[in-house]
Length: 380
Image (tube, rainbow, N blue to C red; front, top):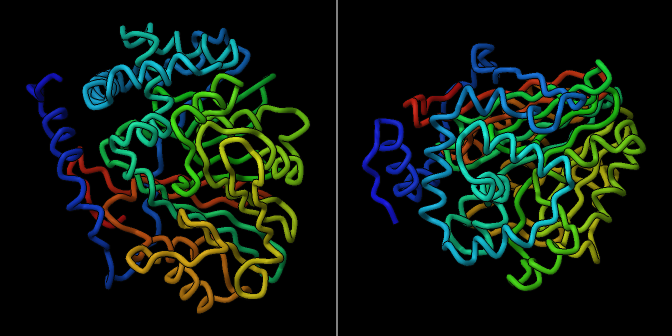
């Protein structure tokens, strides 16, 4: 494996990855919560699905080509070569997805497999045991105001070096914005997304009931989804884009290479759900808003199955419930959810972005939080 003999960015990146265990445990608490800083909104890029596939995702990649090449190089050094190659070779991407990734590879001047590796970070890190534990801290909330307004809010806790790759992808087809979502340059899917007037979704990692490597490879060879791709595939399916119920059923029945949680908020009262998935899609669980906390007005997903207690050393669920019960269904709105997501332990030095979404109005706000590469690890 190569040494980190590199410019300032790579020095900070390597240091951040190696010292990460010291940072994850630090929670930001006890300070007044300022409102979202509009200067921290993620930059917007237009992704045109009518363009040739090889060109669609290249603009954000080109603008971050130095950082992205360094990131891919570091991951390539860290992941075990043979197992990673086996996982990559098992993938059966749709033809246009493969062309899109080839376009990214061409833009960066790297191998196609390197781009696939970046898109499969969640799967490869978990299946190889390298950096996989860094995926496991996200918080998503669906909440309904007594007036019927439904909201989705989420923090993604991820290795902060990835924060330099974040942007807001506005995806167009036929001259109309089909959806928008928070994306990482080089990845052809979205971590949080909204189909305006339809539904919004976020993805959270799940580490229970993980398949063996062979089981995961079998699902991949059969066309199982990569985690950030499944949101995109649902949003681009005509029969799913505008229907909350169709989205819930899609996520509940689509096999994924690894388990995960999909947190969905609709545009109408009562439309909220958490889908807990297994890699095979067998025995997937759908937790409805009506069966949620507070008598059925909010759901909170913090990387643990809702039917079992969260561990005492990571009980973000308890904190969310405590704060949400204080707020109440009569008051809750996007800024209240911002406050919940801005206090430790829900907000910590792993939190790299936050989304506030109201599907009915099409309001989609996505903010950069910590970015330790640029030494901006501050409360925003």
